[in-house]
Length: 245
Image 1: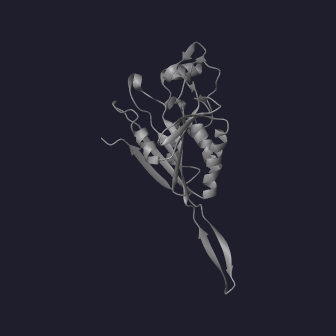
Image 2 (image 1 turned 135 degrees about the vertical axis):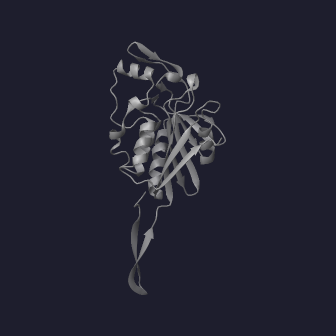
């Protein structure tokens, strides 16, 4: 995680001078930020965020989204339903293969003029830090219901709904990340810009609602702006993934 290194001191009785043995982080945490994709009635305008942990040769990708039933949400005179609704079952997919996850993400929007691009921001962390993230998700599973099992992932229905303002893919990913990297998104409020992302219908519905615009990062595109600047935590590894034409 940038300067994430420490030292331990050991004493060799046969050789009086102390020896400093550097300990380097061997696990990795990546925030995966997917772009909007599609067009017309196949457009998905909000993007996506997931957390990827590499630990002891294994992949753990935590992918929270509205992968189940959507629920109508009323905003004053507006009612958003179906794909445009901000509320739905909170489904957590846990992938065991990054290659399979990113192939699925790359396929989003195929057949349209705009496919998904995923920006990955990686941080080298210690195994103990990685376990804090895994334990965060394990706690969520204690009250979850197994929904389906596939070759590369299992999906669970969480006890709490997915909601556009939180909990959503971005807010949950950041909450998990902060278990390992507490200073992540400390200045995230400076990058909140919903007008840049929300479609006109969503903006009108929001203005007619009882909700206030959050002062925390909740939109993937705004999170990507924050991570590109990286004002709080140095990024160790950067990658971009998209469907090759």
